[in-house]
Length: 334
Image 1 (cartoon, rainbow, N blue to C red):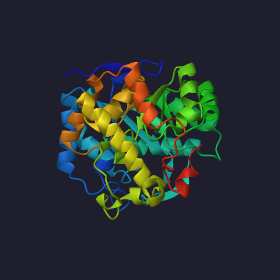
Image 2 (cartoon, rainbow, N blue to C red; image 1 turned 135 degrees about the vertical axis):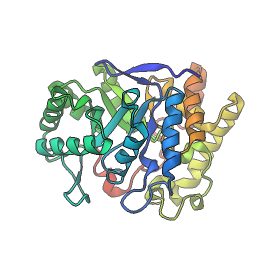
Image 3 (cartoon, one colour; image 1 turned 45 degrees about the vertical axis):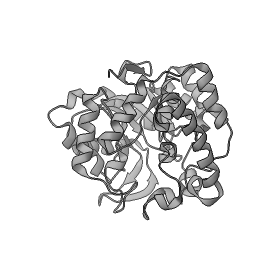
């Protein structure tokens, strides 16, 4: 199986058609985002991904904090140049390594954050460095100006933004070319289309990276009731997974499963193929080898225009599947 390389943005970054979201490989703030993880299996998953041609790893200083970047450092040791590493900064982490839950995009914090990430990743450069969320009290020009200095210093290769509006993207891009924007995007979550963000990215030649491309697990078909989620799983707090929307969403998943069965693929693979066929880079998260194998195989699935339309007709643009975050987190999206 040969995973094709695709251009991300217009500045020369080339990556595998499908990336690996690493967040779930470590716990988070004393709990677990998606149930417990096994470090050895997580590292084996990263290695298996590379064997199959998947070399793009997505992490952030927030995950852990720092545990995720440190895990990746172990996985890529001695083989750094084979991987494309994306990390993020912006959620402020204080001197005691505690998340303050403020967003900090000030120039001095950008500099501090990158040094910390380089140390935790045990590398001297990060290929793609994202601002995790917009700091609404700091002009985007200041943040991106600081990031462009990091490029000059050779500490990062390319600039990314996450969960930002078209206006923010245009302002940022005017200071220094933005290579990629990352937002949640799946058959269940198409806000970036509704808000015209994808149109802006296409116009400016900026790549789009889709996180949670499997609807945070919904599109795997493995969640049939709220009880399928561990007690401390953060998805229990998300409106999309709560009573008002849950059962309606399961019906949509069943329709996708029917179509996947007809095509002889898994629902996850169909959902990923829908994204890849649009020229978008999905970064499904997993911490197990068997799922990374399944996910990477989705890159080989071609969908006809009719199949793309059929899928989109199951969940038409504008369908209310419930908000993707709780109220606090929604307030941090630009």
